[in-house]
Length: 267
Image 1 (spheres, rainbow, N blue to C red):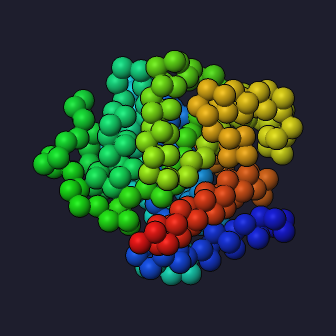
Image 2 (image 1 turned 60 degrees about the horizontal axis):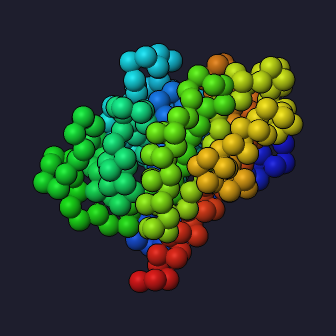
């Protein structure tokens, strides 16, 4: 394993929140249907386990809408102890669509910790008193990092309506002080050079253009946008696929830890 990979992997595996009120960092992934949110969760799990996993179910059919139907928290089991977990977890949510999919109001409620794990999304947004509504969320229930997941392959177009939804979610997260990053997936499907060698991710002019476009449309700073190739096609763990995933994961944890420290200092 390359030195950078080992350093980032050790950082992730040894991470533990210094805020005593929180046992694990909670990261919310959101973005359009088919962006690769569930695949990214599986990819992170694969990197941590050292073998291909598939806990978060995925589906390549975009016509029927989001395959994810429930609000679910994914924690990652430690290889050394099956009864314990690494201190970072991901929440998967219904994908955004123009006229259906996740309600922006529901995502904002999730940011605040009001959506219980296992809540099944439906056409009407979640309200106080509904089953699945958490009336008294603590810091551990709230989202500590918001990550926008966007595909690079053009299979999903970010329309003006979608961009407005994403910017509204970002504004809400900003009002809560929640740090935000973005991950661009499917670079291998968008760029032949990356498909041939994943080490070309950050050399691709096409993907650089996608990064610039996302920065302008959604407003996420360039240094907070990461390119990855998910383990959705690759049958075996590879160092050059691990590297960008670990780089993004380390930054996610770093941003989240600073947020938790700020919460503790403001108490």
